[in-house]
Length: 249
Image (cartoon, rainbow, N blue to C red; front, top):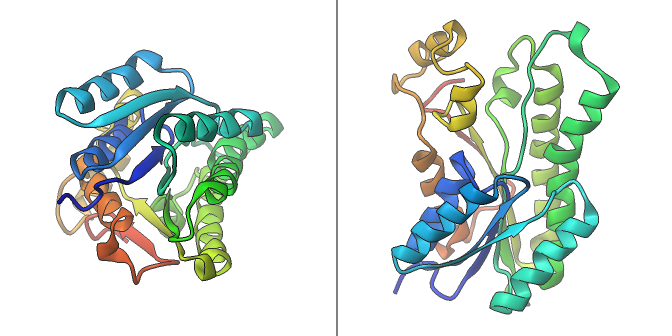
């Protein structure tokens, strides 16, 4: 029996990159997966098609995680299709780096809306549908909350908030057997990091050279950790911040 057999997982921001890899890995382990997307419908449907073609179960659901009505609909659609929720992966996020001179009110609310309010709204919705047996919430933070690089004040602030939310909710929800953990990736080779020019940049080269394992992370590296945290194999872990960075600190 697969370790996530008969489980239902909601993965936000799952049309590309780390989210897509997590959705596919959870499906491989037996979970029925909701592939959430905000705008990239075609990419989300490709993820669903790959899962289904490999014998898994998945549907794509559009929702902006920074909007409560969208989040409520995301979980309503999930329960309508599969009858329950066991796992939530809060992966949806954006990042914009720049010096303090570039910080704007609009940029602040945009990043905090998706990166911080989004996981809070999704977690609030998920706990309403978790059974008496509990569930697993996995937040995707970032290694920047440990490294704190220059030019990342807003983004690092959002991901540091996720670290704190993870610890707080682990204490709040633990008595209900709901585990809350965070995976904080280092530099990962995704479509977004390539499109943004980060991969191949001088900063990226320096980070790789300072990474003990001497390579970029791949989305599948993070997905394997997410599958572990989704399963009973991690039943004694909650409130953990797992720095998945190849050793970069």
